[in-house]
Length: 283
Image 1 (cartoon, rainbow, N blue to C red):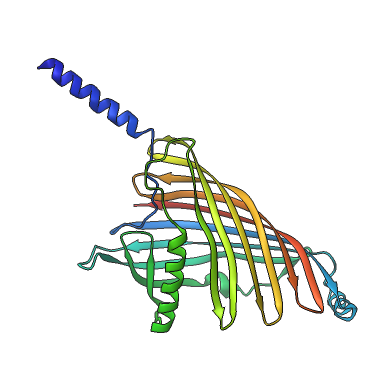
Image 2: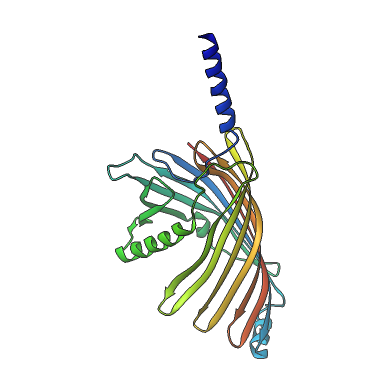
């Protein structure tokens, strides 16, 4: 009998050790949780404008010299709270975020930002299924119209098709890609052709966390009111994922992009560096 107990104990220990070798990766919101986070974004632009000499001269007279270098920073933080599961397998949620920083400079000159912008609170309420999808019912205390809700749902459904999670546990060294090409209608006869994807590679698992490297890829191509716009780029990033909470604790990334704008009389060619930083807690 003692041998059976010893054998069972060894099997259990072995199973627990093997469980640490892999992780089920599936980001989702859970009922009765608080999701606190801070988000910082940065955008550095380096642009060259060519075309109609009269337009270029006018820009120069307004102090816009070439190349145009712009630096934008945005910071915000807040909480998403979820309630108890309801009979229809959804649960209520509230969102309360506040802009903590917004700064814009062009060619080294700071552009004044109204102080009230950094006092703006972004509030909303809605509900979610037991997953990552959110349906907002009101924003800033105002009910969202049915037509707007329908458009938001269509957009979420489109994104949902692109974000599929692995159907088996990942081991260190495994990778998978989320995202792909999308065709988004913005007005009658105008669509945004976009491809957005991220390749995740699991690096290690320890202390209930999974550590990933990320490789984002992005491209966008559309025309609106005679202006043709094209972006494309790739980058690097890292993510720390809480296995218990099914949610990221931190994400950092950088995307280097090339952009082109053709507006008829004026063309814009340039580069952009987009940086993002997210930190969060779940309780």
